[in-house]
Length: 294
Image (cartoon, rainbow, N blue to C red; front, side):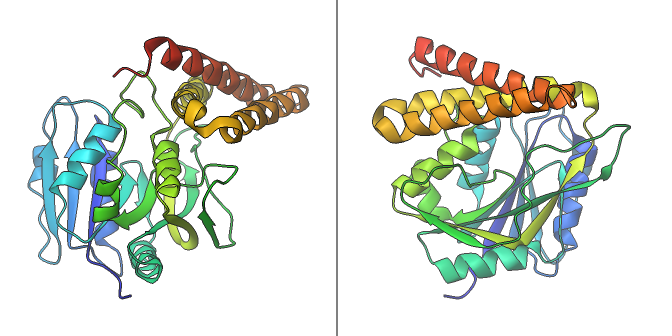
């Protein structure tokens, strides 16, 4: 199949400079989308970005009063006009070949296909700066059915709009801006695979996660990631049965082993693993206690 027309959706909250630079990096691409849909949940409307124009690609700015990245992505999905929707984040810069690579791979996969790609770090933008959620594998892969890990990367994913609507969009209870501030991409990947879709990891689809976070954010972010991951597992544990229980046990065992092994020489890294474990347990308990309520 030929590459589909695409809407690139970028969601943001209170990071106007990063957001503008992310949008500008998409516009520097060798292939441009039909449109860039910006969903901005910032406290104040960004009049500079709202006024941005490019004769080659429509830029649509939506200021949203709701909170949560999943709600923002769902709004971007609802507003999009392309056959495919390609999601990226406000704190990334995309490679010039990114969109063309992602869309060619998606066209080859067909309507039941989903594409995700590599996430590399930029140079440090602040002393001790770092970037989370990196994916550096250089080997392509295709995943289908019940697999043992999460493979869909929120800031770098493409799928047909109709397919995403079919599975109900993103779960607004999960992701940054909610009490369970992560896991929304893992939940989406799990549901897409359960619906019979295939996920292709395409290493040529590269984005660069900007290393703007300071070292003081490392432990709190690992905790938040754990909370969201725990909620994601709690959501699917009953229906997922032994498969998801096994995955959860392996996840906790892996991070416990890493924490113990790295503690003598890398106390900060070990602390990150410990915070993640505590977050996962906390997310499991909190989601279960709330019965998955929004």
